[in-house]
Image (cartoon, rainbow, N blue to C red):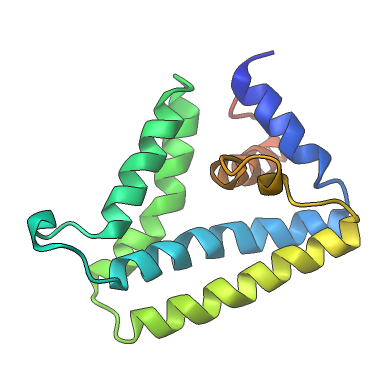
Length: 150
């Protein structure tokens, strides 16, 4: 099995409950986008120029996904990121407040899902599972169409 298959399988083991799966398919993208919104809103050093902390997290994420050498993973990760980057291009007002609220509510949803599941979240085993979550969402959605990220 490839490293990606092992990570997705490991992540999936703590997401067997149907309700938890649905919650994660909604909350994982919301957490990703709201985290980027929070990072976009944070002050950044002048030497960053027009780059924000959100740009840095995006670059780090893409770097992590590149290590899988899988074009489907890259396409999916870019599709997951696109709504956020489109949204911020319109310079939404109250980005910080909206992002903070969505971030908090989505994490409450995630933890509720794990209460239903009766299993700890995968990221408690390894923080990199926070980057595997969006791939797992993609894998589970694509599997409905008899396709796969693998």
